[in-house]
Length: 498
Image 1 (cartoon, rainbow, N blue to C red):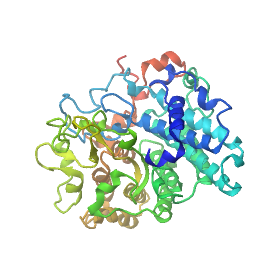
Image 2 (cartoon, rainbow, N blue to C red):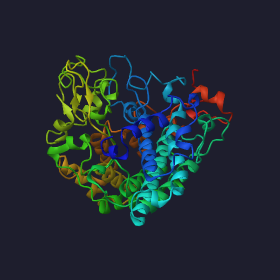
Image 3 (cartoon, rainbow, N blue to C red):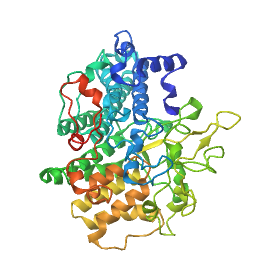
Image 4 (cartoon, rainbow, N blue to C red):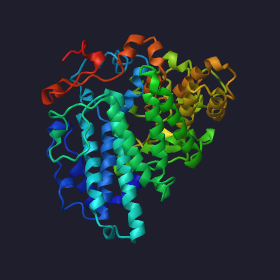
């Protein structure tokens, strides 16, 4: 990662990879010997290396999967943003619908990230401050920063898992044998998991600050802005309509307050409408938290990643003639206002044959023959427009419609389409539409659909499936063989095909 390079020299890079990558499945790994032995956690450089490993593992898990169909992709593909394509089915629907043996239904890989953060949280406090190669005051800040980022990564990872499976084992201690993470460990409830996320974020907030100590850390290192953005998303997720209504107002109020903190204290700004591409290139003034890639360091998602599913010629001169998946007409119909600058900023050939997305098109070629291509863009997790629209959603839920219009209109005006002219009765719908238009292929759309309750009225799903939480992934059948406490997600319990 470009801004994590200062964490380690060539030898330390090799060490981190050997120590933290492991095998694809957690249950098949060898123990984490390197990062857990006491001889490693001795200096500030060791702590920095361990933190770099946490970020590497998070990135690895978000992009885990076959043929580019990764966990990150799942945030969009089930919303029918794409029509059926070369594979003859809708992405994720049909291909994975009842198949619990797929790699993506196995949550154990995420425990690699969890164990990396658990180990760091346990070991770093015992490193003497005089081993951080700085004065005591600076060393204290650095130690706190490393711990704060680890707490954030653990909270984000558990929240990500909670949106995929709902319930699973909650592990807060480092383990010497990776199989301990799922072998006969009781499940925690969804509420317990999300409570732990909030506890971790409280710890992170004690140790992190607004802003960045260096410009090259912008958005790719967690800070207080990242923490409050995650607090906002967790609280709004807990207030989704298919959950008990009694707690919703308190969760929504907490989410709105967290959004306020991000907007007013974070120092973030919306990029100019002529510079939308800078968002995805990374480290823009709008970015709050993102996963960094650098083709110079052989880090990319491209020819064998999720962008390969929707990019083709001429955006990829030596790529496929046509994309594997084409945007659905229903989704493209949202972009019917000719004044909307996102029409050209986000699309190639909108309305014509082979309409493609322009968000991830910083293309490079590592070989002279240009037969292999790579993308040098970042994966955007949180950005300011997302938080503004989330705040508008929260305010509509609190019946503060005039305030909601403020944040909705800021996003609309940046896109060139002016203030929302409709009535309050349709305000929440408009907020959701702008979320779809602004954030597609950024991993948000499915969760926005679920969180707002639009999943229940979507023609491809049903109110019953929403109430049964059928948006969760099924649990891989192999996990039942390893953990007697394993639970199938309710919707899938009568539908699985092992």
